[in-house]
Structure formats: structure tokens, C-alpha cells
Image (cartoon, rainbow, N blue to C red; front, side, top):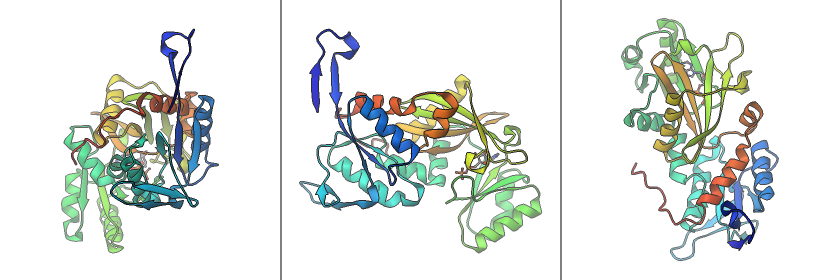
Length: 319
Ligand code: ADP
């Protein structure tokens, strides 16, 4: 790490660090990847985009290393994982290898794994007493009535455990529809959650972007007319929004409970307060920067400047 002092600079800028930072991303032309690279370079850092699927690892006791395009990846001070949902297993193994090498990672491998598993995520949030929609998990179709009973009957939401971008999220308006959809999914051996429908959210959710235990930007996403899912991929529209203190603290607690330093926490406004839908470990920057005008990429780099190089123990959450 390069350090030099500006003699005449204000106290806040006494030290300037130029770091070598890897962005783990499969595609260097993605908006989020480009913005992180640009924000890091603007602040004087050496930014490299590394495709984690092209990394291969040498797992030895004394000198664990990562090879990339035939050469070892060396002298990195920090990594920013941007791991897609379809490659969590390999992606988190690469992040873990960086951790073994003592490299600071913006999100730790275990925190990414925790949040990627929707069920595990909800169980941890519940344990922390964070607001959630009432949720049931079911294996046998003999228990359908019981699961519907847990969430208070129809209308209810059925979700594929593996779904993303709103695909596999179904609103069943009647008891009979709920039964048929659950039977169909289970017939295909798909794992599903059954969830209380938060009707009063009116097709909108709140995306809270958390960096280092603070919400740095927030937007409201409203689903297309007649659509209860607010996903932008499903035609939803985003606008900047001011959160209530309760929403803010719920988002921060949710990210913390996963052990994520960078997280996109999705909340619904329920009658009984904010409820968490999901905690995303590689939240996109495009929608939130466009809706709020906040330099989210810059805030992430600032966070790395504060934390990288510190010898804080890794992965302290015991589950
Ligand atoms: P994905 O991870 O595929 O985006 P989500 O669980 O976040 O799936 O659901 C997608 C969207 O559907 C949410 O952003 C929200 O707008 C809507 N939604 C999901 N679950 C509920 C629910 N229980 N009540 C009301 N709306 C919901």
C-alpha cells in the first residue's frame, strides 16, 4: 500500500492511500462494474476487473494463491465481489480464497452465502426479531392446508426458493388457486416459500442501499399497473424516497444480521411496520444512482479506503 502525506492538506486528507482493488465480475461492461472501476480510478486506485469464473485456485497451507489468465493475482489490498446468483458456489469459493490470502473483501464469502439462500436469510432475520411477512416452508403436499393456515389463508404469495428478478413469485388470490400452484411446484420438486400477501404495499417496495451500516441511498419501486411485483425487470418504475427512521434502522439491522457491509435491502410498507423481503449482496448501481443521484460507487470505494488494511477478524457471525 502506497502512503504519502500532503503537507498543506486539511487534517482529513493527511493520508492518501492508493490501493490495488479487484472487482470480481463476469462482465466488465456492466453498469455497476464500470462505475466501480471509474470511481476507484478517480480516487487514484489501481482497479482491475477479474472474472471470478476464470480464476483457479491453489489451496495450500502456507501460500494459498489464485491464478488468473496463467498468472497469480498478487498484491491486492481489497476485492469487491459482484457475484451473480447463478454462480454463488464458485464465486464465494474465490472470495474465500482471497480471504485466506488476507485480502480485505467488501462482503465476506460467508455473508454472501447466507443472504443468497432465501430461507436461511429469513430464518436469520426472524431470529434477530426483524419484521418479515409471515412465511411458511413446506416439503410434502400432504401439508398444504397447514402451510396455507400458517400465513392466514388466501390471498397469499408463493415463491420459488431459487427465483430472482420476480420470476417464480406468484400471487394466489383464492384458496383453491394457492393449493393448485403449490401442488404444481412441488410436483416439479421445486422448493417453495408460502408467504402472507402484503396487500397494503400496493405493488411498491423500498430498495435501501446500505454501505458500512448506513443507508446511503433509497428508492421506491412501483410495479407496472396491475402488477404486484415491483421489480424493474418486470416494468417497475423507481423514484427517490425518504425513509422513516424505523425503515432505516430495519434496513441496517437486516444487512448487519447477514454480516453484509454492502447490501441492497428490500422492504415492503406493511400496516404493522416495515417488513424485509430480501437482502441482496450484489445490489445493482444503475437504478439507484439514476433515481437518487447519489454517487453510490464512490461511497463503496470510500468504505474500502476506511477499512482495507485493517486487521479486523473475518467472519465473526457464528452461523
Ligand atoms: P425476487 O428475489 O425474485 O425479486 P421477491 O421476493 O423480492 O423476489 O419478490 C418480488 C416482488 O414481488 C417484491 O419486490 C414485491 O414487490 C413483490 N412481493 C413479493 N413478496 C410479496 C408479499 N409477500 N406481499 C406483497 N408483495 C410481495
